[in-house]
Amino acid sequence: MNNYCKVILIILLFSSVISNAQFEKEIIEAEVVTKDFLEVQKIPGLSISASYKGKIIWSEGFGYSDLENKKKVSPTSTQFRIASISKTLTSIALAKLLDNNKLDFDDSLYKHVPDFPEKKYDFSLRQIGSHLAGIRHYKGNEFLINKKMSIVQGLEIFKNSELLFKPGEKFKYSTYGWNLLSVVIQNASNEDFFKYMNDEVFNPLNMSNTTLDIADKENNNRTKFYINRKGKALIGPNVNNEFKAAGGGFLSTSEDLVLFGNEFINPKIISSKSLSEITTSNKTFDGKKTNYGIGVSISKTTNNTLKLSHSGGGIGASSYLLIYPEEEITIAILTNLSGVKMKGYIKNLENIFIK
Figure 1 (cartoon, rainbow, N blue to C red):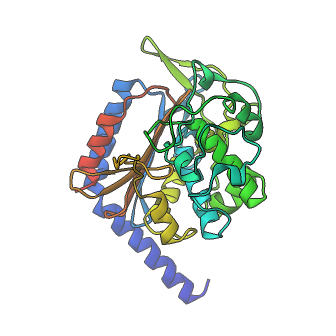
Figure 2 (cartoon, rainbow, N blue to C red; figure 1 turned 120 degrees about the vertical axis):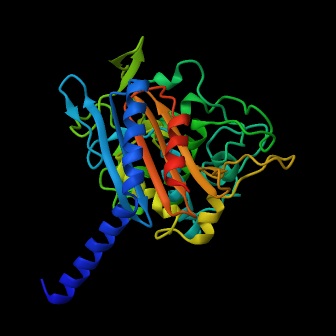
């Protein structure tokens, strides 16, 4: 290593030490509230990572990814179901296609998926991505589907359902809408959806531990997925989320999600213009803000600064991605338990880190 490289390495290491030292008090407080949260909610395992100005300042695993074998959680390698945070990952893929003039958010769905059954009303990609299209969500126990299907085969579940309302009239959350958007990405890019996500989103952002949750494939890094039954953590039912990957089927680590979240603070692979498109609140026809862009929730902190976020919930998964662009802080929280109540915990973390 030459002298120049040594100097650069020393500078990088020194700046990292300064960042960590700057947040030493906050990290100690956050560890206390996290251990409390884990105990009260009876969570088998949790991974949390936080960054400031693009550098990780705190990354820690709590509890176990596998209770039976006492395998500890690692924020670097333990892969959790991120559930609906998958929508946020997919929003960056849509933004890239927008930058490359492969689609426009105001395009009709039928421009990109012409064989989807015609509905009473036309609807746009923007309306789908912002949950304004009227596409239905799960019925009954559809979230428990354990059938291996491609993203195109997955359309069979809901393609013949009527729209719930005239597109633009109201906000109605729909994971199936994002199933449709994965087919849009596949057709607009002329590439396999998963290849496009890897080549254009995960690899450029160095998200080396983010992947499709393939149900029937051995994966030593994947956590076990637990449900709470009368205060006891039990292994949840087997489900197959591959067909709905864009809306809720990816695995990731908390460190990978922090790398991803930083794209919303200092974009490197998409333009500022397309970032603005996905992080601007949409409105219903009557002018009411939905506080949701395309794949991301939009709100304010107690300091009245911008907060971008998305939650995720599924079998053996309760997750949250929190992005504070003005403070340049990103926090990713992943757990391996269904139905965790996270609101109070997140408020505590914000009181610690967002000042």
